[in-house]
Image 1: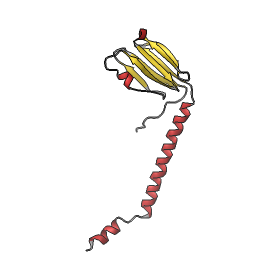
Image 2: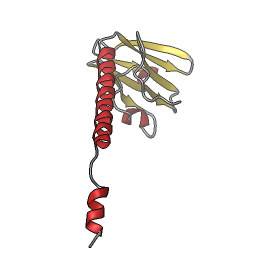
Image 3: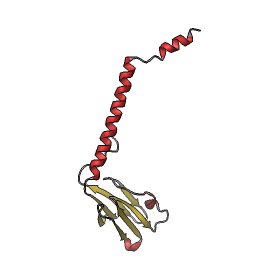
Image 4: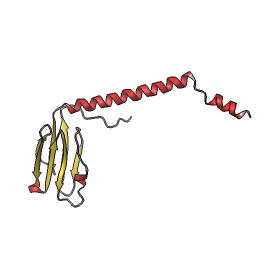
Length: 134
């Protein structure tokens, strides 16, 4: 019979618990707002996509203009629209580069290994922080 009273005391919320939960919620909200702010600030910057084959730069694509580019003699087609980029067509066997979908942030890449093609987005400014370790 004494167990329910002991459980009630054990699970009682103290002032320290409330302060700790509030601090965690505040810090979580702060980091979410900080991350969204940096993403929105980056969207306003001029972005370029660089298309390489091996070490040779094939194209520089301005992502502020909608266009489609054929590279490697029509083997691949790169589409830029609404500030993003994707591989629309590729003759590689598995089409992994096409399955990567749209990329839009600085530092994101698409790689087609069979065609030795690398597409990388660059912008003026810092790239979005993906993770921080110590």
